[in-house]
Amino acid sequence: MHHHSELSDEAFELQFASGVFPASLFIHEAHLRLGFIHIKKYGIEKAIEQVSQQIQQLVTSIGAEDKYHHTVTIAALHILNHYIRKNPEAPFQQLLASEPQLLADFKSILNKHYSESILASPEARHQYFPPDLTSF
Image (cartoon, rainbow, N blue to C red; front, top):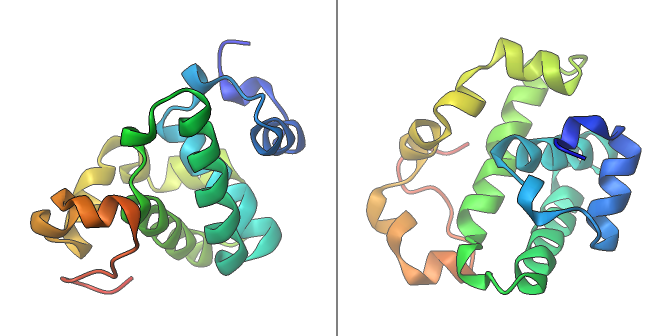
């Protein structure tokens, strides 16, 4: 497999949950897709619980715990949920096409909600901090 899009949503979700999804394919788009699948299927609260847990399991399994950022993970889910609510019938790829900043400039979306001091803090890597600039 060369890209996460080669998997159906069901296979992608199952592989990720069972810890067999290749970490090398977990790019930003795959992160958004995982969130999209979970938000659509389980709602935002359950998505936050499951996605953050599964990403933590992935980074632990590859010895890259320092790559996980809890505040950014949860913020990404809230941001993604906002765009899903704007266009609830759109499949994932259509959502990305209609909201290209999700892929092309996600950092600037985050920066509308968070100051750099929050995002750079070691505490925000391990516990969730709500936005300090603009709510979701």
